[in-house]
Amino acid sequence: MKKVGLLVLLVSLCYALCAFIQLSCDVDLGGKMAIDNEYNSGDMNVNLGITPGIEVLGTNNKLIYGVGIQYQIPRGFDEQNAPSNVTFNYIPIYGTLKIPFNQSEFHPELCAQLGYNVYNGSSAWKGGSDLSGGLFLGAGLSLVNRNTVISFMYKLHKGNAEMTYYGTNLSADNNYSHIALSLGFRLR
Image 1 (tube, rainbow, N blue to C red):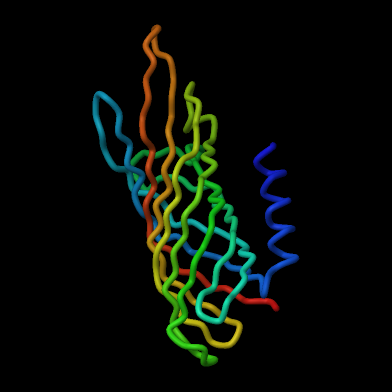
Image 2 (cartoon, rainbow, N blue to C red):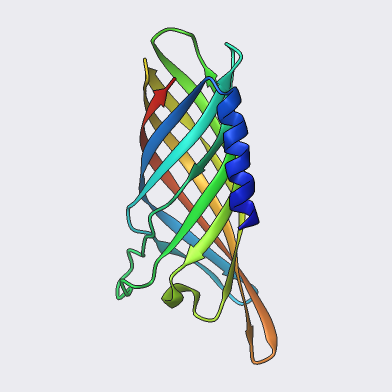
């Protein structure tokens, strides 16, 4: 709860200093959940997902920078016999940097995101595990036409699952990577 309060304070401060807000909705094109522990590793295919988000952005006429948060609507796995109640999601909280190629009304931008993920899962996904978040990375390209933004991004969400099994502590890295297509709008 302290993290959410800190985020609200940070977003409020940024809003007071910001040039604009960007609202977006990503379509996450499947991707893979890589699970790696001491005993084995493997990948599972993930269903298509939707991720709304908001970024509070400032500019110095050469760079666009700010903070953002996204919420992945829980998604399941595209695997044979995968139960529909086995779902997970990440909530990335991040800093962002955008480099416009020019200042015209229609222009491309390089985009980078770096932050922390809150990692959640259904009780069927977690079992007896405790989930913890980790690093969030995103990189890609946007096309901006006035206040409309279309983005193509690669994103990596890191997390961890820990449990005790017959007195032995077990830990597994849970890393979700995917391509996101996004439609966004900048509000000044």
